[in-house]
Amino acid sequence: MMAEYTTALTIRRGNTFERTITVTQDGAAYNMTGYTLRFVAKEEVTDPDAEAVIDETVAFSAPATGIGTLTLTGDDTNVTPADYIYEFKLYDAAGDLIQTLGYGKLTIADVALLSVT
Image 1 (cartoon, helix red, strand yellow):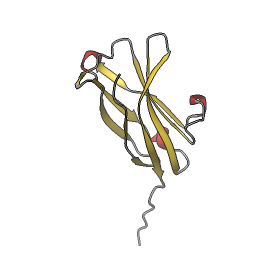
Image 2: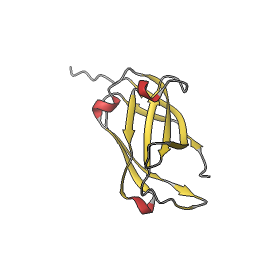
Image 3: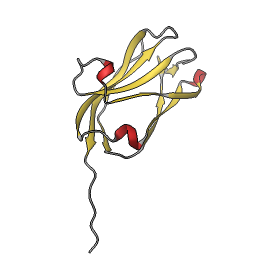
């Protein structure tokens, strides 16, 4: 079983967010060929994924390395500023959930307004 982790993320509303994600098992790269890793952010952990405010797939250009990129666009993060729960969910080729690999608090912060005088 892969280890779960938890961490807090803060993103300004409407900003692009990109992070490299590495999936490992027992310290070695996990071959993601045939698997899908989804990032979902919801108001409550018990909310169904269909109600997620953000739902994106991690892109693996070389799946055998276990290294992928999570990219959230400005449209993805243009949601009501608040605290959300996020999860990284691993699915098999049939679309069945295998495991939640990571979770944590996602804060969407309001955009700071600048003024020119």
